[in-house]
Length: 235
Image 1 (cartoon, rainbow, N blue to C red):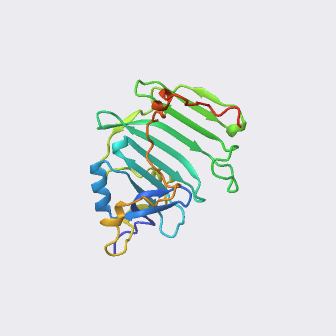
Image 2 (image 1 turned 45 degrees about the vertical axis):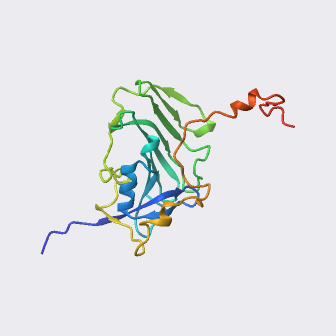
Image 3 (image 1 turned 90 degrees about the horizontal axis):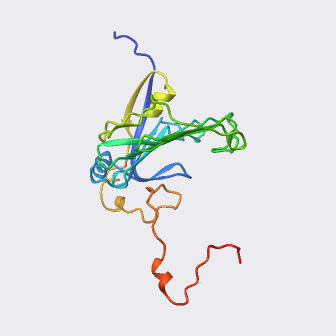
């Protein structure tokens, strides 16, 4: 008989075109092959890691290479986001900058997600090496301490291949025993072609890649009779 390898934690991996932030569920699930094609093409897609039988995810990864964006969100057992990692693809398209990291450390099971009393911290880094670290031990109601990142803070990494992403939640949570991954099941023929590319009916609560700010109706400023207001005071 072989040696006992101890407990094994199974983590299911699922792919989709969108992630609903409010419902904490995938929209338009797709096969891993379709997700890989979208990754190569730079199109948006989402990856969710979940322990079978657990209603909330361990981790959600949101990718849109065409927008130079990756988001990593970690959740606790109550479905509250505890960590957000915001790497950005640099112009050489081969490296990621750890643009922003945010953490929330809930003090009890009854505390709501992002409660203003929740202890939190954040770090922002810029391509020129500058940045800031913010600590709020008593949440938004308490004192805020801002410092600069130390020289030992990792500032970037190579762009991982489609199947080479480390699962941060599995590392940070120290899941019991050996962790093994398997693809979540889909109905036969589902998530391959056709309607799976359409997200026009996706709820407004679905994640969308961040976009640069766009100019307003500048041409209207040069039309006679145009009135411009900043909305204050309210009418």
